[in-house]
Image 1 (tube, rainbow, N blue to C red):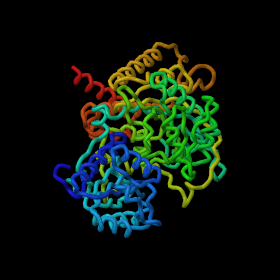
Image 2 (image 1 turned 135 degrees about the horizontal axis):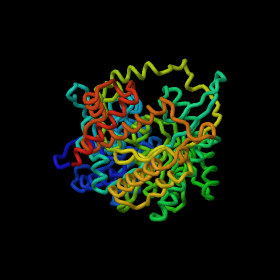
Image 3 (image 1 turned 45 degrees about the vertical axis):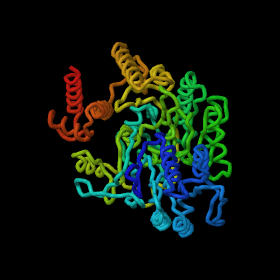
Image 4 (image 1 turned 90 degrees about the vertical axis):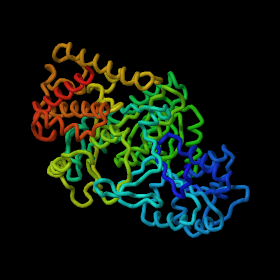
Length: 561
């Protein structure tokens, strides 16, 4: 902030130290008498106390109990911590504070000021007179087009207004500097069965090409605590946590649940798995913040929470996560992953278990891509020249539900889980295997302390070993995700299964090539189409997809040579 601007937007990946940065700026401005007091605006009550504790460590006294009802605080405090909801309730109170004394306002996770139009207007009204405004965010994008107060927007080359950060520090940079952990995403598919509200029984495999509605119902079925999918994934996650704790004894795990009923059920399952009762955090509990703090300071294995710890809560020892919620916005996913990436010492790796859902796999693959908040632009694949025709294809396949149909109850009948793949460093590793198989164990047993390049090397080696073993095995042997169809050996996969597997392999190779060259995924697909001919991947035959796989592998060999 050498040029001393009035407004400053700092975008830093979760876990990179935004709080430390902001308090350093606050201390300097207070020492220079540029400002005389501080107001910190945070998304939640818990984060108010967390900010106050962090500020106290650097000699800045902050009152986290300040509210619009009392409108007063002790002279012992240099500043106050409030929530965006609190500001919206009493904007003129905060405006008066800024008008009476030169104030630095720290807007933590400033995108929340756009959560509703009233919040944004109140934030702007309250802090327009502030002497300095420091906006912080780890996820500078929103799912809507509400402008964020005090954020500058500038048209890009296409004329679309895009947020402009004064300083950005992305995940890739932080990973390179050793500030955050690398993340292993372990995806699980499986067969799902459910009954619709009309009484029809439906079966589908999670991760197969499905309509939007069928994918959502299969996903909800997987998360049902009475099926076999979630118990199998929790067992795998606990096995992974045990391996990590061999090297990091106090490593903890977090299950992010959709609702309170599911959270309690997952906690009961975890107790049976590991013999220890997890910490259950429900957002409406008065002692929720205390439970999080006790878990953070302790060494117990698991915490189960409903959304509350998805953003800003600092529990550095979290190392294993289970994404057991049906929330699929990129904002929430990024915030959830951010709970696991804070590094304590070199070599720590985070492991996050998630269902094989296309949107989640896409977000996981984009971990190293910075995204800005864009106004007035419909969501889409920004960098994919084929986005229009792909979108038309998706629209043609989508079964639009009747009004309210997605919210209607349905009955989950059963589910099973199979290990699908590992996503890491822009690549995909592993071959489908039954939950509990030796192939799955190869990936769950990766050491908890490894440098990022060592993790990539180990993943490549284990995948090569598994592929070689499968190639050498007699027909009908091996431990794939599905057993023999009729008891007389494995059946040949159906055409749609062949195409699904080939598309997955091609997408993994494109992801690896993107990481190697920096080219957007859509551009790589376009180059493959130009080289090989044929339609978009969604319409390509198995032979056409295989040709593209062979081509991109040839590119990799030529580049290595």
